[in-house]
Image (cartoon, rainbow, N blue to C red; front, side):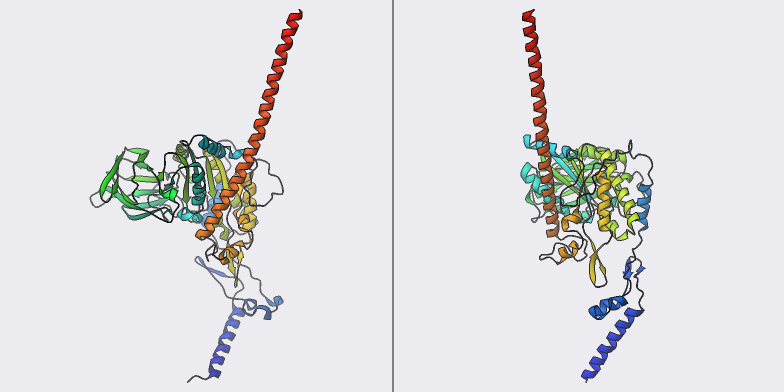
Amino acid sequence: MNKPAHFFLFLFALGTLMLGLSFLSPKEKWQVGPFEIGYYTPSELLGALWSEDSTVDKAIVVPENLVLDALIEETDTVTTPLLSEETEMLPVAEPVVLDTAIQLSDVKLFAPFFEGLERLSADPNSRVRVLHFGDSQLEGDRITMQLRDAYQRNYGGTGFGYVALQPLVAPSSLAFENEEGLARKTVFGRRDTAFLDMKYGHLGSFTLVEPNDSGQFVGSVAFKKRKWGYSRARNFTTAKMHVEGASPSIVQILVADSIYSTRIFPAGEWTLAIDVPNDDKFSMRINSKQQIRVYGISFESPFGFHADNVAMRGASGMIFTKMNRVQFKASLEREAYDLIILQFGGNAVPYLKDEAHVGRFARALARQADYLKRLHPNAAFLFIGPSDMARKNGLAFESYPLLEELTHRLRNELLSRGIAFWDLYDVMGGSGSMVKWVDAKPALAVRDYIHFTPKGASKVGASLVGALKVLEDQYNALIAIERVEMQRLADSAALFKQMNQGTGAVTGSRE
């Protein structure tokens, strides 16, 4: 039978061991593969009982990321223009005001988007299309879905746009089930070096149809509409698919094993429409004699507002200049994007070493955005900065110390290149906001202190819609002033002409 004294003696020995380890453990965490290992300091164990003068330096070792450093070095050392002449750097007012609004050097830079909306208001049969690139914060159509639904409610249109035929995370409106004979290839993450042409379509990925036992290239996928996505997104009326193959490909849409429609894609690279049913469940079968790539399929309507969500898990945004320029440019022009949004930077935050490293990364990332702007100059461009992120330091979570510096550097680099910037870090509330979002009831972020919950993503999406509306009001007010001024000048010119004509007539009669 255990005596109480034995129990307390055990607790005393355990506490002594833990305190002893805190004195003996190195003050800095050490790296083991992708993991950091460390132990509590005496101040963390004893709290107020331990004098602050006795605490050790709580420095945190920044893990190395050789891949990221190589990408920064590659972009940062570019001395020749990426496409044509070097970008003219626009002046940026100092100091830059930090707020929740979309910041840009000239509101007229958003003319392609706002003029598209005005055109759509006048002609409901026209189209406006948005492309939203980002990292894992966008997976499952998050953030983009709120933007899309808000504009589809006001301007019409259905469907959720482009998606990979084998997405890593399916969109909220449609489930992808029972994929067979399909292999996912991406330009980001671990890239398959067998594909040297770097043709990945404008989604940065493609689905490879693989051969079966008989040597035929056959792939299939089943679709099922989800009930919890926005109704407009899942009530698409048509689809189109971007395919490339060395031989013709047969694409069939089936409902309950019965063929609903068939489309033959000729050899080469094509984007063709496919008839799809209104049923909640249907499937697709692809057949070809040679290998084919499916660069993406878009579920949409023939008119209205559309927004494509392109989530690139683990990407830092440094891959666009690596993609096949001719194909990438042709894809952007074919879809006629009016607004392109980029949302990157978060995956680099844990690996930033100092302010100089931050500056080099911000400059390299801004050059990627500038490359896209040159590639498709007919669109407005918006960069969404990284959200707040927190790491554990002892017993408490704190924001990454260089995150605020990163948003500042990114803002200046992007604004000087004529690209709008929306500071998500500031929108969340700045330093320490991620911890508050995790602790909120209901939670707005998950306990990895990086990603949003569905409610948090919805809040960000709604905030983005609001910020765009404020910018649109500013743009419309400016255009209204310019139109009044142009009318005044036109009236003055007409009056001057009339007066000259009248003077000439009177002079002639006197003579």
